[in-house]
Image 1 (tube, rainbow, N blue to C red):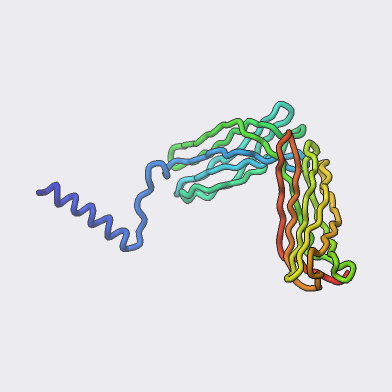
Image 2: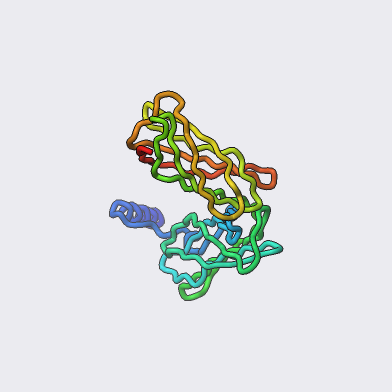
Length: 241
């Protein structure tokens, strides 16, 4: 009888805590730091850094001592620290790791990550992995397009940067302003630096008119026999040329 009363008391206490808006105690795993490496990593257009995707956690009421990522390839390596809020929530984090010398490349890289925390004793989480490294095609679409030929087309600037190891393929810019729309094409240059191209987008039906519209740029590159893309889109103002 006494055992049943104790169990009833525990259940009643937990129910009261929940109804009162209280939080249940953290599970054992949530009291430990966490770091897990995702794949793929991404090579910056200038080949000077690699972006690594992590899932990381600093437990609540702990002090973060260290959170760090290291990336290594045969010809280049680097490491950097990153920040975490110590609230027990696991978060997806993107960390840009700069090279300490030499240029990173597409292909593969070894990644090592650590999260170290303290509350009395020091505890840490570590992860290591060999991950694929894919190129980034960075795209920026201008917010203004200019009318040409009485609305038969608009011209719009798009800026693209991609690693020198990549090759630009036929890419597209589309512009929409009801009832008009159209798509123009271009081939980006990949040498690590940004290049701005003025793309002509012919109207496919009704002529374009001045005013607010929408545009999207889809950039396609090839690297190591695989195809990758980059995208930018948003509102665009169509103005007289």
